[in-house]
Length: 462
Image 1: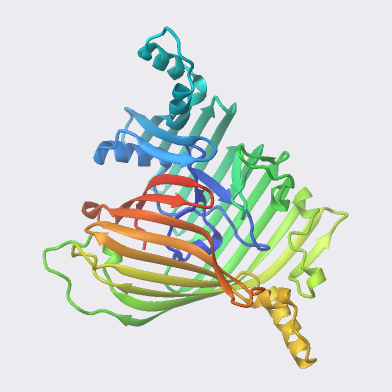
Image 2: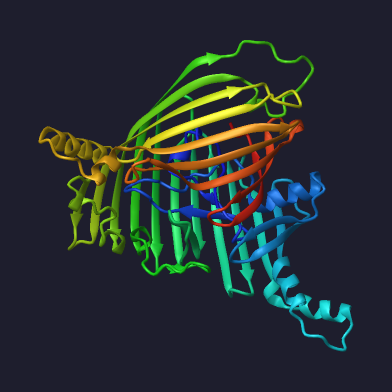
């Protein structure tokens, strides 16, 4: 279910779309975890799911692409591209629930029918299949229009989506989906009848200012997707219009960067992972959210009883709300190796600390200071609010272009006297760098908490 991008990516703070194997489109949008953030819709540098499958089939001799989810079990996917001009990619997608098929064959009662007849009977079960259609058209050199449709016989759900990408001095994404698929912080999936969104973000850079705008409208009542037993609909999925905007400034510093010469006539397995360095970066910014409709009828954050809260304006009679806040993030990266040799030539560590709510942080700090001044023990909620959200990523070369990577959020249990450290939503992956393409990789990842597995293709990730 994870996006599996290096967390030092400047856009990762906004919680980019998350990869998921429960749909053939392979994308779910995250919900706001902590107040006005995240903005949501920004996508990473990667191919659409149909193009990924087509690439694996055409250039990596993979007739099928495997994936696993609790909702659909172990499935295999295949794409059939249709002959169209170079600026128009169209394909038919197919998914086969292999786990369900094998299970049904094993449970079949003995009969006079031959083994092939039994197999044929079970293969005719329509619930084993999912079909999809995708058409991606290059409107101009900077604009791409994608239209997708998929249907599953077992869930009787047909998903329709249209996405327009514009890339120039900024990245603009317009999306309409019915139903729209969302995922909350607990890994639960939600379907909303109609979701329309517009997202604009400045081109990312190592240092300097940036902006991010997102407009989203949700129509109809959200329902739990298959496998979700939750009962209360998240406030951000209630019908209504939301407008979010953020402005930030980023500063990067190199503590050390290797000037040693690389091996001659040996191309790195990934050119973006071939520069040893130790660096840090900091981002500080402000974000504002305006809500109109039922989504403003319930406050997104209820910290009033704890004595510290964000800046919110709430008009119940008009079904509207305005929230404003500050945020900050600090990251540290240590990279060893040029990723040219077969062994021990790539080790990478990245740590990121996020403060998603500056006003909550300052209010909690004032609460703690007041309690310490009065010789009282600070409340646990205030101390916990002072702790930033921590995320760590580790990558180690195994052999040649293969490397292992682990990404996870870190949570320290302050209630435990031993300060027990817990890993939240860890993701483990094996990466295969496609050396001939400069910076591309095939990733097979597994998320144990969600019990999801997926194989993806990514380009130009740092």
